Each structure stands twice: as structure tokens, then as C-alpha cells.
Length: 440
Image (cartoon, rainbow, N blue to C red; front, side, top):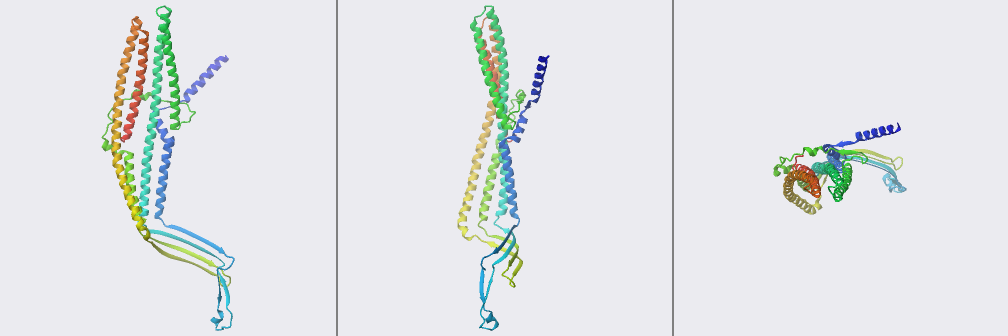
């Protein structure tokens, strides 16, 4: 009775463990990577920072408001004098009257200044901030593309390893069958023990490969889990059924010249030129006159003692004009420098555009080569299957060698592994090409 309870409990725990295991397909892995990957998160934060810079630049259109307040008390009066009161009263014999002031008091002021003309620095500064946001979006797109490609690479790596696990299981079945046949033949005295040892040696080699494959699969899943943000302790699996529906279609080819403007890298080169031209205008604006108007309110209270207490508050309007005369000489060189930077950016755009076109052509060549490798692998599997069939018939008829049969089975396993790797490689290279041509 106790044994039955233990068995049932174990079965329930195994059932719960299986139910708790989450299986992710490729699209789910990509979605998790964009949400949880550190690079993707940091690119989003960089975009938000650029948006805050843009909002900060916009505040320069509004008046700047400043307030100041000060109270003071000195140990001696800041001003003292002798007033010739006798002379004022027509009595020259009357001695001067001592008088002091400004020993304590308070001052307050508040003003608002609105820039009227700043050489275009505020307008161009806002345009630069806008370009900064657009560039951050393009950088985010490039980072997201990188994250998606890496996720797909890890995904297909796991799929390939899982498919190789199936291949090993099939090879294991063939070897077990061969072991049974050879042992029966040995018991019947038809073969010597050396044939059985050869089969067992192949079984040991297969077991060793099976262990390495299991470790590699475990490590690959850990790497994917870390990359897409799955908790390290979570038990999960990858849906590898997608490999059965892979079609060797070459319909994804597009005109590379027309695809070039869709590349985030190319658009970023344009933004670099736009920013450089605005920098020229900004540098020019620094050496133009600036005009501002403003209004203010002032208050002061000086208390030199009764009855001479002084209080006053008043408003005022003002205008300022600043002309950076001494900066014109050095400023001309700074402007020329910015113009040279624009020329450099334009040269980089032309050069990098050509490199991007070459890259797209190379990626398409890789896709075609990968498709051919899959076709060759399919033919190799058909040949390997026929080779196994023939050597099995020869061996069972007593006209073939056991080593030939074992070699044929080993070749079949290798060709199936090569086919799995070729399909995974084709999917990866096709994804790279689609992304590089703006199709994803």
C-alpha cells in the first residue's frame, strides 16, 4: 500500500513538472528579447533621454525669470559724512553735523527676459534636438535588429541541437538492432566476438556524443534564457517544429539600390549631415548680435535710523543688445571647421552607402549558397539511406562486412546532422538578408 502511494505521488509530481514547463516559439522569444534584453532596454532609455533633451531645448523659447534677494547689516556704516548745516543755515560758526548711513537694509529684485534675436541659436538648437530624437530612434531600431538576430541565432542553435538529439536516437536504435543481431549470430557461432566488440565500441562513442550534446543543449538554453530575460531557474523548452516547415524560397530578393534608403544605417548618415549643417548655423549664430527685452520689479529698504529711513519699490522695462566683436576673428575659423565636418559627413555617406550595397549583395550570396547546401544535404541523406539499406541486406545475406554496415549507419547520422545545420544556417542567413533590406 505504501509503495502504491509513493508511486502515485511521484507520478503526480512528474505531471506537475511537465505542465509547469513553458515552451516558447521563435516569435515569443523575439518578443521577450525586445522587452527584457538589457541592450534593448538601454536603447529605449537613450531614446527617452533624447526626448527630454528636445523638451529642454524647447524651454529656451520662453522668458528666463530670475529673482534675487539680499539683506545686510554691517559693523560700521558703509557711508559717513559731515554735513555743513551751519553754512546751510547762514551760521558759519556752527560746527558740521556728523551723519552716517547704510549700516543695515534689504534689497530684492525679480526680472523676466525674453530673447528676441539670438542669431538662430534657439531655433537651430531645437532642430538639433529633434534630429537627436530621430537619430536615437534609428539607433534603437539598429539595436533591436541586433537583438532580434542574436535571439534567432540562439533559437536555431537550440533547434539544431534538438534535431541532432533525434538523429542520435535513430542511430541508437540502429546500433541496438545491430547489437542484437550480432549477439544472436555470436551465440549461434556464426561470427566471432570481435564483431560484437565493434558494435559496442560504436555504442560507447554514440553515448559519449549524446552526453556532449545534452550538455551543449543545456548551456545553449541557459544562454538564450539570459538573453531574453527568462529567470535562470525557470524550466522551459523551445518549439522546434518550425524546422519541418522551412521552405527553400528565394523570392525574398529585392533591388538593393531601392532598399538602401530603408536601412537605418543609411538614414543615420543623412541625420549626421543634417546635424552638421545645423552646427554650422549654430556656430554662425554665436557670433551674431543678440537682442532681448525684459521687465522687472525692484525693492530696497535702507534703514540708517530715524528719521532718515528709506524704502522704495519700482518697476522697469529694459532692452539689451550684445555684439561679440572680439569673437568675430576666431569665430570665422570655427565656422569653417564646422563646414569641413559637413564635407566629411557627406564623404562618409557616399562611402558607407557603397559598403551597404556590397553587404546586401554578400548576404544574398550567402542565402543562395545556404539553399544549395540544404539541397545537397537532402541528396546526401537519400544516398546515405540507400547505402544503409544495401549494407544491411549484404550483411544479413552474409556477403557484407559488419564494419561497412557500421560505417554506413555513421554516415547516415552525419548527413542528417549536416542537413539540420544547413537548414538552420539557411534560416539565419535569410533573416539577416531580410533585415538588411528592410523586409523585417
